Image (cartoon, rainbow, N blue to C red):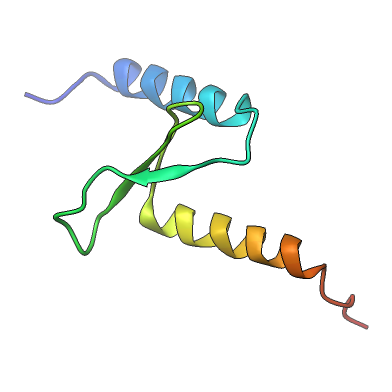
Amino acid sequence: MSKPFSVVLDEAQANLKRLAGCPGPHDFVDETPEKTFGKRFRCSLCRGEIDGVARYWYMLGRKHERNGAPPAAK
């Protein structure tokens, strides 16, 4: 049986609050090591959860942060 929309919405909003309130940087741990696609990751600091695509973009942003921002487009 599926959850009512209001419950799903409340869970999603609580997850976003956890992620936004994280002291960071996030430390994402693979919650689904048996999967190749449809992976889920949980931050060990705030317990917020994201999917594999969101983690990819987060990690790319962290890499850019370490390497310095690229020059602005003209």
